[in-house]
Length: 148
Length: 148
DNA sequence: TGCAATTAAATTGTATACAATTTAATTGCA
DNA sequence: TGCAATTAAATTGTATACAATTTAATTGCA
Image (cartoon, rainbow over all chains, first blue to last red):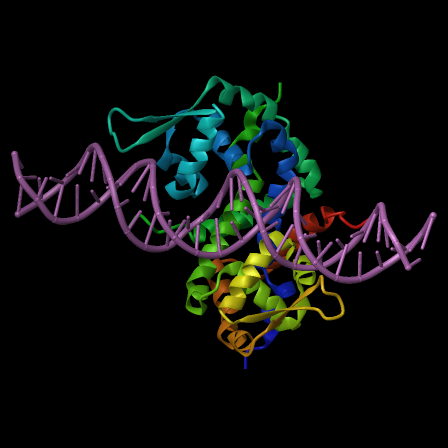
């Protein structure tokens, strides 16, 4: 007999992560609504702010998202005139995503978000680092073995 | 000038949580596919296994989901004959969700999942508890002040 | 060098999430 | 007690996620 303790929501480890992830998206909303972007769109922009002009695949590798999610998301960012989507001339299969002037400028407006989000979380920097490092540990342990 | 360090994906605290949450859902999939349910559906069943017959609101309070998400999800569980949806006689606005025999039986098949998931995560029980307690801390700090 | 295998995005279909609104029932007070 | 206010689900509309498939381009080898 397996004790059913482990099937209780409160003893679950995964539910708090699922709930926290949604809560974080909620918290971001108040800032991102002003920029008229969603949290996944913000993540894409953040990757591009750090290094402009990347392929859909490169964005997907960093954000762990596939083209099924990214393609429509990027089309929405394109409609908002925040990014450009261009087929690579060297390889017509590849689509390169780059920031528009407006997309690059949005970085300034977003610069206060990390600090404000930190305040909203109500935990210490140490707790933040702990959470982050354990999350990374799991993600690395389970790193998609897609290649090889 | 705000240093743009904080706008880098790698220094983000929230991205690992978002990525981890999706990874966890992925890991569950291999087990839940056999039961023909999704992770959110599994969470609903888990709440009902612990205490059968709850209203949509009660499920929403525990899972932090609203009727916009729960109603269609519960209809799918109903279609799979895992739960019953009945209007309360005492208050016709309320819908009570209860397990069918098949829904209750699924608990046995699910009993091995927590243990197997733990092995897949690749972290210690201590790290698990740490992650869980920090997640709870943030969630409580930000507990929706909907009521009051 | 032709063509099977591979690769990159896009597409299709299903299932969440959630804001905003609607519908129907219930409460509680003037 | 009538009715405005409240409440519980459901509905509508938009935006992810992601499996599976399709389309189009490129590779690499017999």
